Length: 290
Image (cartoon, rainbow, N blue to C red; front, side, top):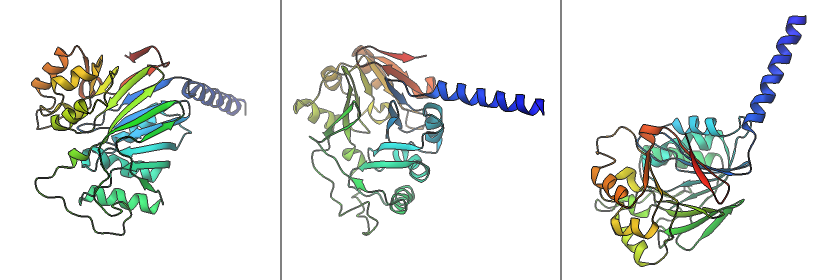
């Protein structure tokens, strides 16, 4: 009997210590998840979370488990930057396993198994999908989000409703051109999420004067040579460039892009080398956790 009571006491102490360890802190935690060749970015403030993209597999669930309290099964906001498999596949299980208050996605269909499965999961959970474009803003607690791209709404008629057949994009049309570009801020700390945009869209952002200098850049398209142009990097002047990348046959990140980031004076972190890249900020100072 005494052994059982001691075991119960030790279990309770362990649970209390675990809860204390995972109790949300009054600071921003920005996590670039290591999910392989794909994007998944998690923003946390106390008990509120934003997830942008879910990567090419279910490793995003491991990232959520590592960085969210074990009792928290709610995500205040989930964003699919665009409907490519390396950004949305992991969101299928996220939608099934977590309560999601808001889901944002560009209104463009992609007639693939991953897109259909995510669409079905959203409809089964009766999660409404909204679309935000350039000029729109949102906030989750003190985390601010401003949309810089795309300029106009998508072309589909309720693409995520499940009620229409998706329009198959033309051979010369890439879903990357619809990638959401989001400028995020927490106090004086700013970071830029760029999806898979290319240098043509970067140039439009530069000429539109919508860019600001940021502390952290999520490098576009996993470090493709067709992104991260010098004039774009000059406009945002990032101190840290994070590349969400895994083993791939595309040569990402390319030497050209790594060279341009270095010339821009940015420190570089890669999820294939560092695992999860975790940044914390009090809204003024910030640091990368080692």
